[in-house]
Length: 306
Image (cartoon, rainbow, N blue to C red; front, side, top):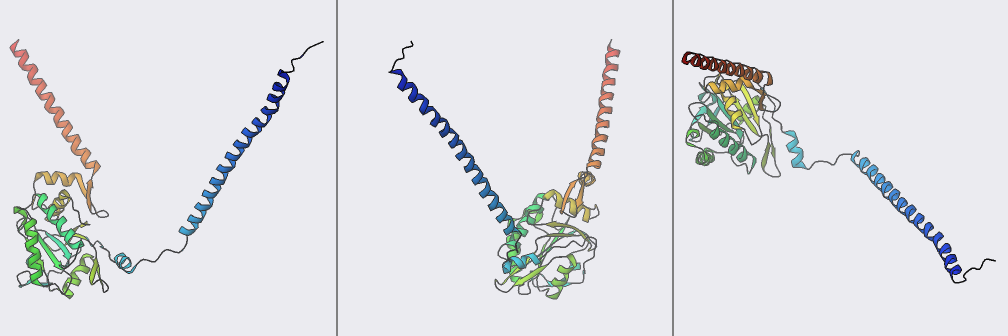
């Protein structure tokens, strides 16, 4: 006969009865977590589908000012000729023609209006900064002609703006600045010839317009475009050298123009890889020949001393 301890039997039985619920509780917790993850993923998929459907819907209409800005562009007319007979009034109140400034040196042409609260000032600041850093001399290597397309701008406003510009310019860049007004139809014709667009906003009393610089060759031919308000000094210098048909600049500029080419799409000068490799190859060969020549000389001297 086997005698069992009655004290241990209830505990063992109790342990057996409690172990089963614990396994069921762990399984239920895992299932609950899984269901929660599925619920979150499903909600995210539904939200994404709704967002995609919203994006595919009709576009939100632009406000009037944004729609007006979307209309103005800066089209390139490279190689085309501007009319040098167009007449204007300079900052001194004298009648001038575009031909008075486009003569034997390239011209930086800026289209702006003198009461502009922001963009035109930014363009002019960028032009002054780039011209100062270009190392070229205003009035000798280039001319800067700023033409107002606002018929209400006056020579007095042009003179005041010129004083502000010159106060920001370095000594070499002070010469060659000309601010013109009074063009009316002529300024509109000039803007059309260089591809510069602008629109008048009656609500704000301001103009929506493009931003950038145009380089003219001494013949009045459109040579280069630089867009925006920030102009790399190196690009501006190379553009002026090319516009002058290499009449200004130095040997270094010629080498840089061989290695960098103007990209009309970006309005920037980019590295011409093949040309740069050619320059590097020639330099490497010359350096190698120089090294060989120096080595041979040293060996000859050492042999003579022996």
